[in-house]
Amino acid sequence: MTEPDHTGVANAIVDANRYLTLGTSDQDGTPWLAPLYYTPDGYAGFYWISSPDAKHSRNISRRAEVSIVIFDSQAVIGTAQAVYARAHAEQVPDADLPDAVRVAFSPRFPGVRSMTPDQLMAPASFRLYRAKITRRWILDPEKGSGDHRVEVPAS
Image 1: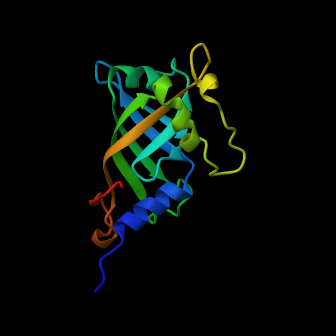
Image 2: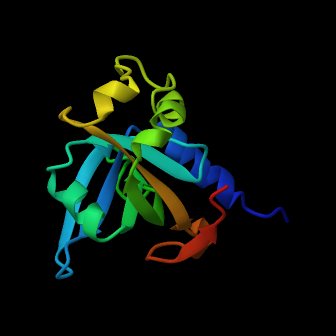
């Protein structure tokens, strides 16, 4: 009997999808969800662009711990799989932008417009953000229905 390839399943989900759902919370613990287009940084992190005035961006500036889920919303009911993650998120510091934009704007899907570091610094309207995965899971296909998760490495 062969071991299931949980890591391969998780990585395939990251590769196949364009949007993640980012879960943040404010200083009082009130949750907030935001769907965001992402670019993966390997399988250990994600980049996205947002306004620093967006609620999720303001939440990240106060509380860096976030949750993330990536899934195919068009999957047939009962067949869906997802990547669930905990991560540490931040606005990319200006000094890191030259290296970060090379990853964040690597070709992934047609139609994505690249931005330069200068376009992502004040007083510009948008900033580059990143999340570094601390833990991630998928649903365990061996357990059948229900929320039975198995942890998978994020490297």
